Image 1: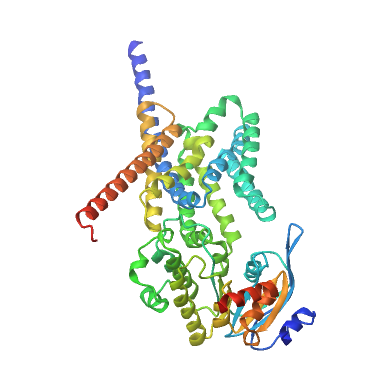
Image 2: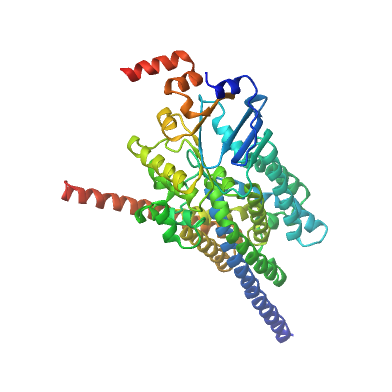
Length: 245
Length: 293
């Protein structure tokens, strides 16, 4: 067990705010209809790093994002550094039946020098004429990423950004985001079920199942250790066996 | 004697001729502004899956209208007061309970309709329910023009925020859009335009001014700007054609405005279906001619 895991499980995981911290979350709890969704979650995130949020379904990952976006009531504190610009890439859109073209959608955010904006986010001109509702999963995710990064955010929140995207199309999306982190120093929050993505692209890992199961440096864990923390030893061993095969 | 009678008759006819074109002119001006503004606002309502909210909201105006008739003040003020109160109650309940807007407005709508029918004097009930273009005054017309222009300006200003919050609430919040406030402003705008349209088409049918043009425009739109423009044009066309038709066939304008709107909607559905079929046929013919493509 790593120090961070120990810290998370023995209850002494109160984050100490530092100058480089862009986010400090302390004893965050969320409940809905008498059901606890998150319980005393605490962690902090340094500027320019990436945090992967992992955990089983119903573990509270998306709820954590909703709390970070101030969309739901919660107890505890969420303290963002002043003057952050937030970009958010949702899993999917609620409504795409509005006949809005990709260009119109992006112009809401990118009001001046549209061509430069589009170039900077790497979208082709062909896609601009299509409506949001007619895009494939991969195309829509690219548009949403473009929307999120077009006004140079300092923080990016990705909720399963490649769900519904073809396997081949996943990597370019993550590479694009990773490049942004390296080039511009964006702080990245990433929800993913894909452990390979987590191990490859995240600096820190926050494993959640209503409470914090693990919070710490990704390098302090192996793939199977992370699986064991989230899903238990049996699952981790069977997965390891599967990979060996 | 006979001459004086003829003169009197001519006077009546003259005054009628003088009155009728004025009433129609006022009705047409109100139709142009209320129709186009309602169509523009409706473009969001139809895509927000709130089409029935617009319809239900219009009935809420009835008790306010009745109070205006009973206590002899401008029914527009009464109608707007009731609509505004409903908007605030809806907004608050939506925020603080798990109920959807449709459910809340549905309850308030039947309650308001019941109260409205009970307190509206029987002689005025038909006019309240279906409107009367001939009762539109110069003051009503000026108020309608000014308020409609304000509604269009505010709608245009908040449209991008409304569109984004409709596409994804989370996306909007992350982009620092206050979704609650934008929704409240939007509902107020709808309430305003509904109150303005009541004299022309009545409380029962005014919701159609918001819904039908936008629903029709969806058949022809592939971009948001085109959708907004078409919604406004269809709203304008149905309101003005409805008023003009009513003056020719001597029937109430309200139902005719709705009928024209519905005709545009049906025509749109048919044209869309035919053009899709034609395109599919053309596509399959091309594939048959060039199987390698």
